Length: 250
Image (cartoon, rainbow, N blue to C red; front, side, top):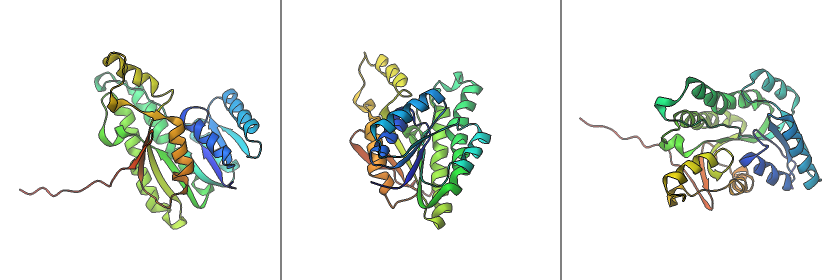
């Protein structure tokens, strides 16, 4: 049982929804965010019914709408944990990627995180935590995901910078690279299956959003570490080392 407040963006489905459910089960004060009022209301009602001892709220906003995010920050009150989960993927080969697809992904995945985190930082209590969602493609690259990889790489840099800046308030800032079957990843996995006679190769096998949520709620939210990039794929849990500098000698 906890008296902490957690705000989760993109909390009506996928990883965000599973984090919300586990947080409610642990009796956090859960604030769900979504863009669709009807869907958000249904999720809030479901959590209140399933976990009557938990305090559940919903806040409607699009992370790309800076003005609305700023207004929400003035009304939402103090929070302990911010989970920047909202994100989109519009994959295509580089030569076929439209400027709109580039702009939309950057606006949601990177600038959207700026909007939410910038305006809510003052709401986060000292000793709180910010969680970013990145991707393996941000670290290693991935064909067809130039926009997505670039947006998620930006979040790693943002995580490491904010970890330093917010250390004075003992606010931990960490990044998580999840691998999970969600509404966003299923289309990409189906394309992979088509290339391999309907089966996913071993290197493409990924876990569930529930496993990611379990790591977030039961492990990541309790860590003393900051500025880290963690990874979860099913039962496989780890972290990425810092980049290593090598001198080039003539």
